[in-house]
Length: 124
Figure 1 (spheres, helix red, strand yellow):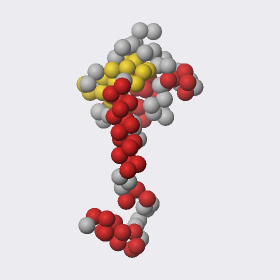
Figure 2 (cartoon, helix red, strand yellow; figure 1 turned 90 degrees about the vertical axis):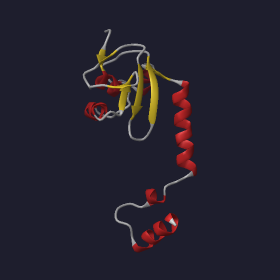
Figure 3 (tube, one colour; figure 1 turned 30 degrees about the vertical axis):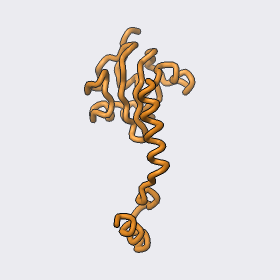
């Protein structure tokens, strides 16, 4: 196998839980192939550089292997290698989330009167 669809590879490499989520991410421009937007049917080959935003984190990876079957996580990890710039960027984002927690993240559903007052105080 020389090439594979990008949405299928993203699913097999465990960046997305389902193939339809991977397809939606590619269509919305959250996955870039060699710094360009692409379509889900675009073929991916070994050596390509991917920028992936799966909602919870951003990855910059280089493709090392191709697979169209979703396997265990250790074997999926062998399909790609994260770039040093991507590792640094992901660690900085995690540190920012840890140090500067958004007050609204702890509120679930409609805020109570007390929650709203706390939000108003944090904004001032």
